Length: 235
Image (cartoon, rainbow, N blue to C red; front, side, top):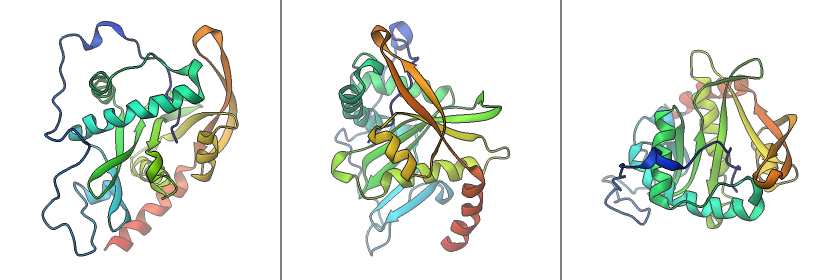
């Protein structure tokens, strides 16, 4: 599924004169790291920002090296969203153009998370930087996508859980919010991932077409309580 992207990005000259350097592999695969095998998951980077789903799959906070893979996945994610909610989608962009946009988003405080199976990126989530709204500080889950052949394995829910746990570790945890169209697959996913519809919100897209949806929120208290238990279990 894909959480619909919030509009607001403009085209034009922001990408002019810039280039994206892709990692050596352009097919979404990574070289197998030393030590892979033995039934144990390979977990790169800070273990506190990584969550194992199975011995061969995990979700983690992304780095700049993941931008190209996320951009490639954004292309089919946008196609799926275009089919479901055409009035709310921007013009189609190529993977290199999307990579440049993701880099701009990260410079503005957005955070990316990826889901991987045997080193291959099969899903991602994008969270905005800190905003003010609903009477306090919040961040918005802007995008979440898992490739169709890897759905129904809990990867999407684990991505949301990792986002919540990382937010809960901040000194002043912000609220997590997401929008989904009423009755959509995205809305059902947010509900099964612990989100609660807090209020209705209409979005107006191209041609003045309005789409009714709801804003979903999560309790950061539950995420904060789960973090110490997960750390203890990892010891």
